[in-house]
Length: 396
Ligand code: ADP
Ligand code: MG
Image 1 (cartoon, helix red, strand yellow):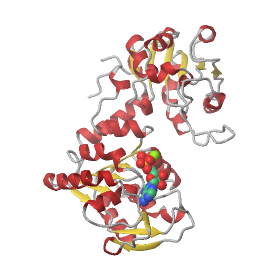
Image 2 (cartoon, rainbow, N blue to C red; image 1 turned 60 degrees about the horizontal axis):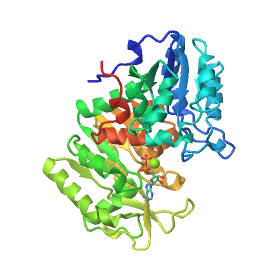
Image 3 (cartoon, rainbow, N blue to C red; image 1 turned 90 degrees about the vertical axis):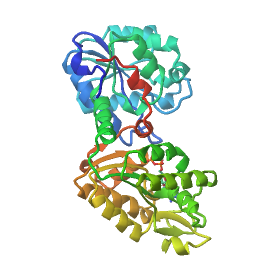
Image 4 (tube, rainbow, N blue to C red; image 1 turned 120 degrees about the horizontal axis):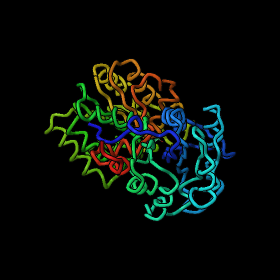
């Protein structure tokens, strides 16, 4: 199924290897990394390359510095964190391309690591400028892409460089992500259930449509649920609503019916007056939704129904929290789903930055089959789109 070359099929000893990683980690106001999951996720590839004697050049973006040098977005904290995780030095480059960087690359011995400065300090990165891609390619002898999280973007360091610097191969994280997501789409054990939530229908409409072709059941929660309820003529007070998507939501419900896909919407809700952590909750159901309140979580009957569905599921894809889990009083629905997946023996794949954060917050990350490091990339993959960063790699 996966027809691209991988790092197991190339000789790297003594070679300069440019490896695109996703070190786009969250930083606090003191520029301390608050979650190093993405750095740890790249370790298997990094360790393998240095053990095999590569002269390793790592490249990543961090945040959105808009094509200019901005020290607030320096990757230096990531270099320090990686050095700590590996227990060996990681040199921070003075830039991402150019003569000084070339010198730093030339000075690398086998097994040593240089981390290039934030690629998005150059507008050429997101513009996929061929000249910037050529400059990156000029630094190395071969290319590895392990940045699944940016594989859905055709940028200079993901797509452009792979067209020039061959062989261009997939790292372990990239392979692992594609393996689990591919497995879910290609030959899912049934029942196959998709859980979709989060704030916006419009973000996830395409994936819902695509998943209708694949799954047995769809469970909807979070802010997007109210647009679907509205399509059924149910008013949900001051809850989030995408009025211009109601018609589309109705079409999806109809499509699910013709396809024989079970499409479950919340039957009850935790509602409150204000979008605030301390705003007190009350329970209502679809028949008595107060006009002056808003839904911030799925209610107990919905939790029970969704848990029952998940108890017999064999494959589950989950993207988007069931409620405003950042507020303790409205985190139950989301945590209950995480618990149901932890208890089940299904293959569970979690995607989406906030969903992953919720699973981590519940302390259940070890009990999921696969936690994707790429929210947008995993959605686009599930939508059936080709990922340009994968497409550009060298065929087997
Ligand atoms: P992910 O990052 O997992 O893809 P999204 O970004 O689509 O998820 O949505 C996550 C956000 O949705 C969270 O910040 C959460 O607070 C918000 N959310 C969930 N339920 C509701 C709701 N009922 N009303 C408003 N916001 C909600
Ligand atoms: Mg999000």
